[in-house]
Image 1 (cartoon, protein in one colour):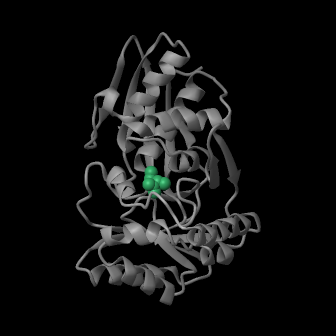
Image 2 (cartoon, rainbow, N blue to C red):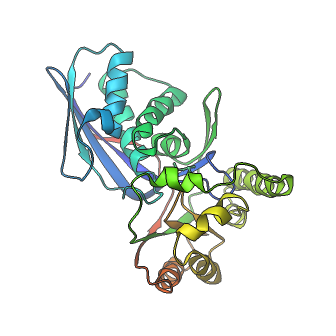
Image 3 (cartoon, rainbow, N blue to C red):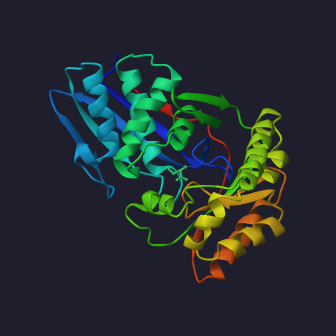
Amino acid sequence: MTSKITVKAPSSTANLGPGFDVFGLAVDAFFDEITLTKKKNGISIITEDDIPTNPENNTAGLVVKNMIEKFKIKDGIEIKIKKGVPAGFGMGSSAASAAATVIAFDKMYDLKLNENTLVEFAGYGEKASAGSVHYDNVAASVLGGFVIVRTNPLNVIKIKAPMNLRMCIAVPKLEVPKKKTKVSRGVIPKKVSLIDSIANLSNAAAIVVGFMKKDPKLIGDSIKDVIVEPARQHMIPGFAKVKENALKAGAFGVTISGAGPSVIAFSKSSADLKKISLAMSRGFASANTKCQTVICKPSKGAIVIKK
Ligand code: HSE
C-alpha cells in the first residue's frame, strides 16, 4: 500500500455515431491527472483549475467519498486535480477525472476491483457534472480502447482498437451551457421509427465488426447516425460544413463527439490527417467559429504515472 499516487486518464469520445450511450473510445488527445495523498482526516481538494473544490460537487471528490464509505477506509484523503481535458466539449472531461480517481484509489488500497466495478464507481462520480449516469465515457477512460456498455446489470465489453486508427477532433471555441449534457440530451427524440432504428443498428453492428477486424475504413464508413446527430447538429455552428469538408478531405466518417460540440473525424494513419483537420477548421470558420484541432490515436486508458 502506498500513501501517495498519481494516475493519468485520457479523454474519450462517446457514441461514435449510432452507438448512443453504448459505445466509447479512449483517445490520447487530452489527459487529466489526479494525485491522491493519505492524510489524517476529511476529504480536501486542491487544484489550479476552475472547478468546484467542494467534494460533494466535484467528480473526483464524489468518487473518493463513495469509495471511502463503501470500503470503510479510516484515512482522510487529499485530492490534487490537474485538468487537461476541456470541460463541456464532448471529450469526456468529468469521466477522465472520475476514471483517474478510481484507478488511483483501487491501487492505493490494493482493492483489485474488477473492470465492471471500477467503471461503476467512476460512473458514480460522473453524476456530479452530467447529472445522470452514462458509462460510455467512463468505461473508455478507465479501460482504454473501444468499449460497449451493457446495463442492468452493468457489463462492459472491451475491444482493442486498431493501431492505425486515427481521429481528427475539432473543438470549437464556443460558450457552452453549464449543464450542457442535460441540454443536449433534451433535444433528442423520445421515440424513434423502426426504419431509423434499423439503420442505426446495422451501422452500430458494423462498427463493432470494424473494431474486431481492426479495419479503420469499416469503422469510419459505419459512423452514420440518423437519430441523435440530426437532432443535435443545430447546436454546433457550421456542423454540416465541417462534416462535408472532412469527408471531402478523405475522412471515412464524421460525427459529433459525445454530446458535442466537438466534431470527430475517423481515418487511418496513412491518410493526410493535417488536410482533414484543416478542412474541419475551415468548416467552422465558415460559421465564424474558431476551433482547436487535434490529431489523435486510441488510448490505453488510465495509468499510474507516479507512486
Ligand atoms: N452518450 C452521452 C450523450 C455522452 O451523448 O449524451 C455524454 O455523456
